[in-house]
Image (cartoon, rainbow, N blue to C red):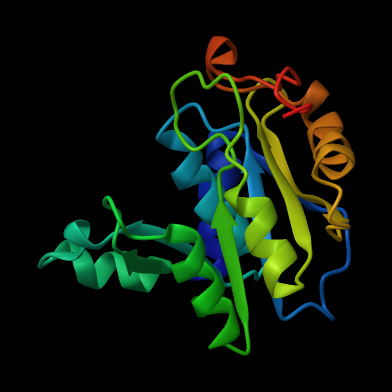
Length: 189
């Protein structure tokens, strides 16, 4: 898809996309995208990353890669993974980072479009174990803007790092605000 067409679609939909940080020297990172409350997030997010020239990848169940969908999912950056009991998504992602020279892996820390009392920790530990930064990305439906905002280098102090990450999202508006949560009740675990 050509950049002009992507820019036209985003403009037609009323979206403005920003790159607030320089990522030109980054070859690998975990991209944490929030809020994630709608299937529309994928569409807007993919267009935004394309416009920003960030070649993203995302994990998706292996079962979705049946013909003809598999071809399109791979073209969009989809990576098939086993998601079942006994398989470790964390291990699969770490292996992916260790075997690629360049990878920008998009993960939604909420883990679901439904309300979730706590964020999943995998995005953080993938970045920590592979020694890559976390790129903070957002989609704000009220302001109709999105993009990449900050770079966080995990320190190993999950509580402090998550507080930095989530503090950015305090002013970001989800498509369905009742499904978005920045709960801190589990930080003492």
